Image 1: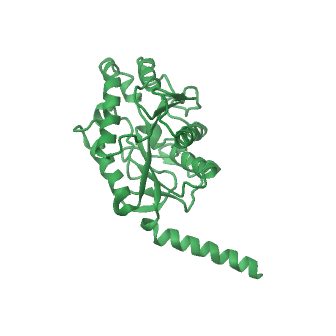
Image 2: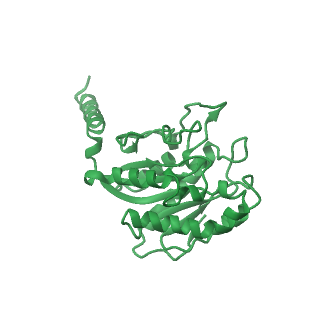
Image 3: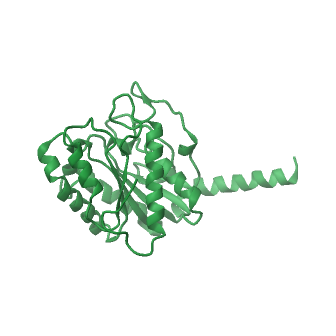
Length: 275
C-alpha cells in the first residue's frame, strides 16, 4: 500500500471517528422540517414498506445530521421522519435533497442539522400554539437542537395544507392561522426574522378548496417568508404525494430559496415567490 493511499484512509477514518463520536460538539446550521406527509416523505414506499432505494440527491453524508426521536444527533438518512411521523410508513422527503443541494453550493454552511417534526394528515389547527402536541413538540425539538451552543436555526421548512383543502371552514381561516403559526414560532424561538420557506400544494386531489389554500401560500404577507411552487411536480400513484423525483425537485427549490435569501443583505419583499 502506497503512503498516499494510507494517508487517505487514515484521514477518512479520522473524519468518521470525529463525526460518529462528537456529533453533539459540532456547530450546526439547523433547519426545522415541519408540515404533513409530503414533508415527512412518502416517496419510495411500496405496499407499506420503504424500498430503501437512495438516489444521489438523497445520499447520506457525515456532514448532514438528524435530530432523532431521542433528541440526539446522528447521521441523517431517509426516511428522516422515521420515529417522528409514527402513524404511516415514511420514505423520501425533501429534507435530504435540500441539505445536499445547500452543501454542494455553499461551502461555508458547515455541518447541517435537520430537525424533522412533520406529521401526515395534520391540519393547520393541529399546528396552532396551545392546540395539540405538534406545536410544543416542534418548539421543544428546535430548542434541544440549539442546546449547549450547538448551532443556529437557519430556517423553518414548511410543507402543509392538503388537510385544510377539503373543508370550507378551514380553508376560509387558513390565512390568519398560518400567519399566526409562523409568528408564534418566531416568537417562541426568539428569532423574529427567522426565514420560513414553504411549499405551495402540488396536487388538486386533497379537496375542492385547494386553489384557496394555494392563493394563501403564494401570497403570504410576512417578511422573510418565501414560497416555492410544487404545482405539476410528479406524484405517486395516489395522485396526492410527490414521488422521488418530485421530492428532489422540491428540496432543490427550497435550497434555491434559502441560498437567495441567505445572500440578500436586506429582507426580501413581502410575498416574494420563487418558482
